[in-house]
Amino acid sequence: MHQITVQRVVSAAHAIRLYDGSLEPLHGHDWRIDVTVQAEQLDAIDVVMDFHALERMVDTLLDAVRNGNFNEVAPFAGDGSHGLAINPTAERVAQWVGESVIAQLPDGASLAEVRVGESPGCVATWRP
Image 1 (cartoon, one colour):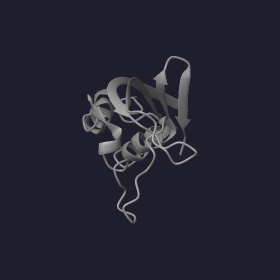
Image 2 (image 1 turned 135 degrees about the vertical axis):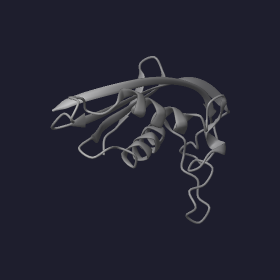
Image 3 (image 1 turned 180 degrees about the horizontal axis):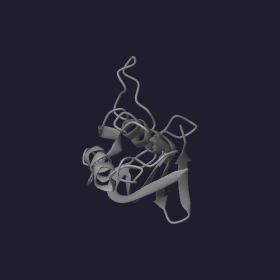
Image 4 (image 1 turned 45 degrees about the vertical axis):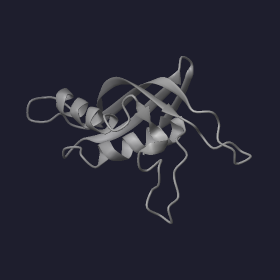
């Protein structure tokens, strides 16, 4: 198995719903996002996939929240299912990034994992 990882940092705010249903105060993070793609076999030019293509996929997605607020971007603003929004936790951000990348991967490549760090030492991982 071969893997490649791209790392991105995006500044964005969020406010998550807490256990009691209240919304925590809006606050920002420099979110570190690591996206790892894998392949059993390398492609015709001996790569998992083009690093730059993977970077563009992730950058295009993150442009929607860059210097903004996750709570104002779908699916966190509402997923279309009865108007319900997904709580913008690091865990759900990782899943959002991962599902978007999966939909765009070339044949032979698959998503291994997405790691999202809100702050040093606080990392959430999503694997499909």
